[in-house]
Image (tube, rainbow, N blue to C red; front, side):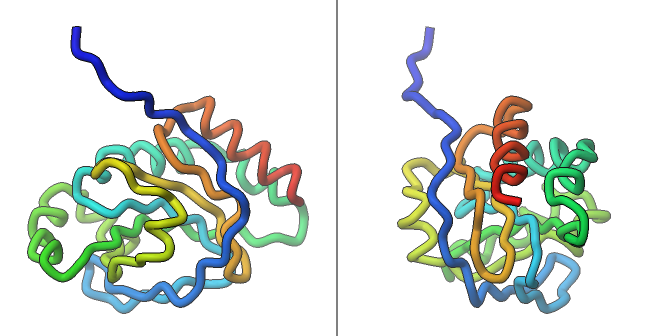
Length: 160
């Protein structure tokens, strides 16, 4: 049996996330909007979890209900924050990503403060958050599971 360190999903306190820009795999400029669902990671190793986060949310209509009336449905983005030397991995990322998702998959410059907030302790560490007016709340870090999705939705419902 192989021993693995604990990898729990956790919710961090609300945090300011502003000024995120990048370029999509479809080579279109990107700037974080006023109401966006963001799934992110800091290494290509996070792509596997990011795909699971996206699938969990894409198949769950509860998000709009949790936001309440008057809130537009957020647009979903997958963002990889890569440093300069990692950007040579873009062709690999394109090969790992379905062409239909290229327009919503973003390469952004590595965000040091966000990396520190999330406490990236392994390459495959991923996160999901709802960013409204520059505030990420909830900010969930870790393993994407149906239980984590429900916790995320509950946190959004409590906030609304």
